[in-house]
Image (cartoon, rainbow, N blue to C red):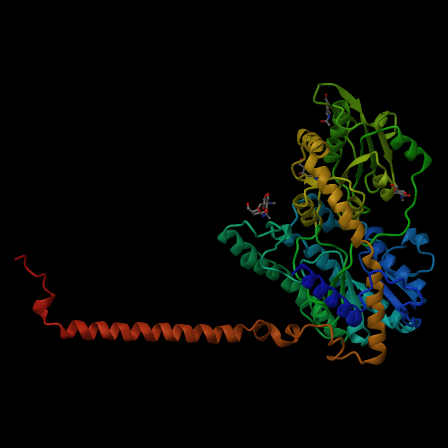
Length: 562
Ligand SMILES: *[C@@H]1O[C@H](CO)[C@@H](O)[C@H](O)[C@H]1NC(C)=O
Ligand SMILES: *[C@@H]1O[C@H](CO)[C@@H](O)[C@H](O)[C@H]1NC(C)=O
Ligand SMILES: *[C@@H]1O[C@H](CO)[C@@H](O)[C@H](O)[C@H]1NC(C)=O
Ligand SMILES: *[C@@H]1O[C@H](CO)[C@@H](O)[C@H](O)[C@H]1NC(C)=O
Ligand SMILES: *[C@@H]1O[C@H](CO)[C@@H](O)[C@H](O)[C@H]1NC(C)=O
């Protein structure tokens, strides 16, 4: 019996080997390499980002760098002079105007100072409307002048870039770091609606509020903006659209710089591709001074709020006081704070510690405190990458979060607005972070949370788990470049019309909301069921009436007891 089985297995193995060439022991001598090379015909690619700023542009340029290596020409259109362009010397930059400085834009200052939700984004919309025409012309000029074949547009706050591709019939690829607006799912929401990121354990009423009421309120808020923008579009002969990002989900490829584990899991359309975390191949090293400081401390807290954000004097002072207290309590033994947008004047002159003593901020800010290192700028990745850096106090921007996850550094997050609030919640649910409320900063709360993050074993385990996820996913920027090249080939051989990328875009997007979801079919089914149930009820009712009428009235009376 056993022999029979063995011979049978051997036979199957032999057949498999013949058919599928399953080679186990056969040496690969004489085999030839599979060739996966494709022709890289040099093309001109424009990368556009209105908001600009290093952390927003950098992931796009990391993809651009791969395309440049493959022989393509890349032009970057963004606000300001992207100073660290020295990191990408082969990218030519055209400026869209002065850099966005949050301190100088009145409404945005308010956006940072006050609690954030969708009702606050009107300021951003005003800026978008006021600059649309000018920016649109700049994009148009660049596309013509440099004979651009494809645009990669940062999809947040960048309607002119998305529209110019559409108007000039050039293929557009969207680039964004969050999924929210692209493919909404019933089980997800966002703090921008003042809702939980997950609807999993929410009550019926809460789900109703987050699914119906808040989105309707948001549409009500942004509707004047959409019509305002469309008025301007009509003036310059650009086709009006409800949201240019939504149009992109129906017509082209969107690259999303995120990954499951950070983002809550959900299915995506084939033309919406997760490619994050996009990381650079190389990062600037620690300065000798910073390197000495971090080497001399075993539990370092790194503090930075990205390239744009900053907080009030009161809150800066509370933060600095917390740092002194965590050092005194020996929870942390060193702090590195990259001030960036925070000025040295943005502090109270004295800090009143909870043990009653006082300390002068000026001495700390001039680096006289042995365990606090203040710098105006720090090479963030290298700081996080150092084994002695144990905690990151961050605003929770996408790039900072990715770098922290990649290096396995737990986070304490102080979100200011935008996607940062959602990121904070996602990182909390990944079990590697805690968050602070910018409206209610409290020194004891900060100290306690830092203590928890450093001691909790689960935080350590989750950080390691997320580090692996981030590392394996960081290779997907090459796929992003491949996909962009595919669009280039496709646009070379096909016209940009409704048929373009038909092999990629699901039919549902062309069928409309009702047909695409079969709601008409379900509607018909429901009417049939209701019809049948109604029919049965009607017949039953008639039958009962008939029977009741047939029974002589005496029989209905309760029979007497014998
Ligand atoms: C979201 O819901 C989870 C559990 O369902 C809860 O632990 C968490 O605190 C909630 N977050 C917010 C911001 O309400
Ligand atoms: C919802 O509750 C279930 C059961 O307690 C739990 O397993 C799940 O993680 C919770 N979901 C969220 C998002 O907190
Ligand atoms: C700082 O904290 C106070 C409350 O203590 C709050 O009112 C204020 O808006 C905060 N400022 C910023 C810029 O976050
Ligand atoms: C600390 O106390 C002094 C008075 O003793 C006060 O002038 C100062 O504003 C206080 N500092 C802070 C940050 O509250
Ligand atoms: C990050 O750390 C690894 C070793 O852990 C090291 O090989 C690498 O050079 C570091 N990179 C940077 C940018 O600091």
